[in-house]
Image (spheres, rainbow, N blue to C red):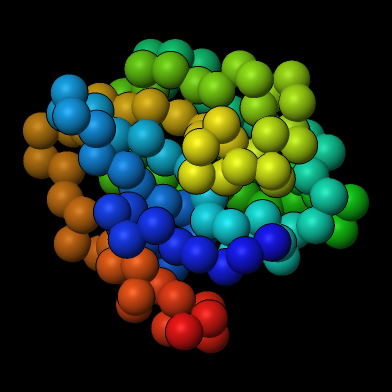
Length: 130
């Protein structure tokens, strides 16, 4: 898998990404680096729509044949949608983490900040993929 990190995204140290959408919502997923590290993904657990997430709180898990990784909210907000396709077919996450493999769409909290998130270049440097 290529270690390309789309430059329009912001990345958390815990490997989640945030995409700002034109309508003011954000899409959350996990990076290709995290997907590669996990290996074959067999199960994804995500919160129900309407769930309130605090920045830094756990919002689910991704389970592979090697490990179970906790998902951490990169921004605070309310879950508008969860990717039901990924719940049914975890391989979508593995095959296309930045497209069909997104996890949640959130309505960010009014005071949501992306200050703790990294640019694609800074994230690539963090994971040693520059």
